Image 1 (tube, one colour):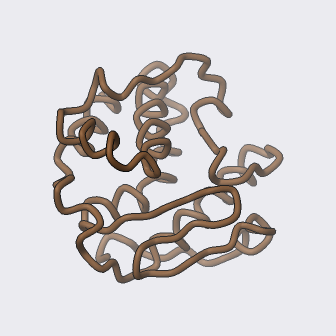
Image 2 (image 1 turned 30 degrees about the horizontal axis):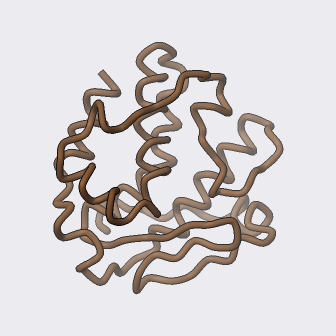
Length: 159
């Protein structure tokens, strides 16, 4: 059920529009805040966001091949621009894991802010030094956990 909904969400993104729209809001901030809350709640040593595959951290040992689940627009987009592919793979992998382990389903919301960026036609780039949401902002990742763990949540349903 979770995987089916996640696949539908990803396949319904207008991938021809991704990166074309100027993103406004604080979706990068909210992603980092939610990720920090995950590490705090699970009492795990924080990792860099660019290496934070939640499904793996929660015990999933299976690999995820998105080409099995995603339509040709998604695959074509990632063949041209792989910078966002990891986050989409992690999101789908966590959804698949949540189908087997329903107790992890609340953590799907960690990835929602970045998925929302794509749904709105925005784009992001993340590596081990920073998260950049095109035309929204750049978030340096040095001490990211300490910076975001006690921040107030932002309502993103309007963004």
